[in-house]
Structure formats: C-alpha cells, structure tokens
Image (cartoon, rainbow, N blue to C red; front, side, top):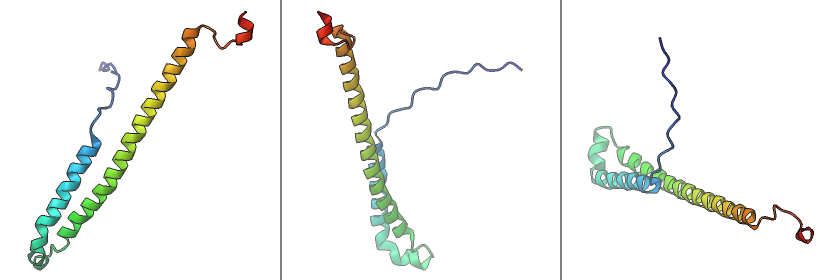
Length: 106
C-alpha cells in the first residue's frame, strides 16, 4: 500500500479568546439568573444544585478571562520585543561596521 506524503502542519489559528471566554461567562451567569427563581422546584425534583453549577461556571469564566487577558498581553509584549530586536539588528547591519571598534576604522 503506498504511503500518503506528509504535508506540513498549518499555522495555528488566531482567535479572540477574551471574547469567546467572556461570552461563555456571560451565558453561565444568565443561566444562573434564569434558574434562580426556580430553586424550590429544582430542589423538589433533585436538581437543586443546578443554579450553583451555573454560578461556578461564571466564576471559573472570570478566572479564564483573567488568564486569557494575561496571555494576550504577554503575546503582544513578546511580539513587540521581537520586532524591536529585529529592528536593532537591522540597524546594526546597515551601518556596515560589523561590530568593529570605531577607533580601528580609520
């Protein structure tokens, strides 16, 4: 059986993680508020913990928001530092001194 040629992996997709996690957090909190008036009925049918599960989801979503924002900011800082280093090294190459002592250029 012939082997299928390997293809390089595609680059990772960029997504707005903060918006995605924020939307999920809002949905969990809305579900908590929607279930809150029915606590008694839910408890009678053995589902009294559902509102608290929704509240826990909203709380974990807030932690996720904090993490996603910190990650986004760290990626932006890393890209800015990488771009700054590339500009500095390009500037050093354009002077033509190749790191030589300025006094030795005469």
